[in-house]
Image (cartoon, rainbow, N blue to C red):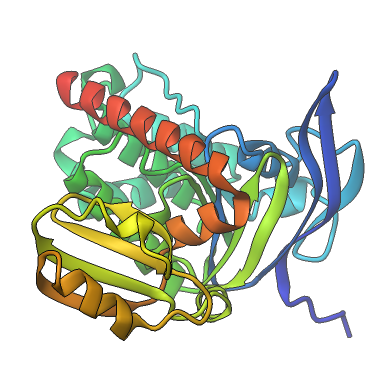
Amino acid sequence: MGVLVSSAVLVRNVRKAYDKHVAVEDVSLDIPKGIVFGLLGPNGAGKTTTIRMMMDIIRPDSGSVEIFGTPPNSDTLNRIGYLPEERGLYKKMKVLEVLAFLGALKGLEVAEARRRATTWLDKVGLGEWKERKIEELSKGMAQKVQFVGTLLSEPDLLILDEPFSGLDPINANQLKDLFVEVNRRGTTIVFSTHMMESAEKLCRSIALINKGRVVLEGTLAEVKQRYGRNNVLIEFEGDSSFLSALPEVRGVDDYGAYSEVMLKDGADPQTLLVTVASRVKVRRFEIVEPTLHNIFIQVAGPGAAEEMKASQAAAQVALAESGASR
């Protein structure tokens, strides 16, 4: 009887350097079967390098990778659907032809690949575009076609590198619905992103990477519990610039009309409420769990905030360019 393998992906102490630049240092991950796993961090943190080692596109300088209990090989790689960050489709080919080709690369008969592709295209609202050339599609439509290509072989593991990059909210939401549907069928999903809000909604377990190292990992529930309910959401009228100077406040994430206030250990939220109510008109005061964004900044240090802002600003530029190209 074979050994029961509970992990879809097992990464042990991998390291990868390019000349003097260390891209990944001593990264270990244990990704159980059947979950949505978030590999999170700012651009340049080492997420894509880690994924490429999972896919055997590059080899680690040290450490090891196992996919379903064995080192990556042709059999295990055929069980993976991979959506890289750098998208690429043959622009002069028709949509259905491209998908049939991608299916054939995974060992499907052409007729079966076309049948599955047609079903998925109908599901994502692109059925009427199957005989159109890739170059006629918008960026969002082409991205959905490439995602469909990852699903044709009905993979046991999906690895998605920044899948929402450049997508407008409608297409991003449709792609999210597909993730949920595929995961409910039992497919393990590794979801790499710098967009913490999306990960917080989709992932059961996470690993936060910064500067090539894992700085935090665990189930989402464990991570939230570890950092306690020491955040307060305040919606107000008036100038709240005084918040960061209060003695019980460790940090403030200011959104203009409301702020998320991170309290110091042992600080009393009621004391904060009395102080704030004496300075501004409070519309809402709620003790909340810290967001992944704020947990990451707390763990990775003040510099992480600027790195994250740069990542998010780049994503906004890409989204604007996507909209302009429609």
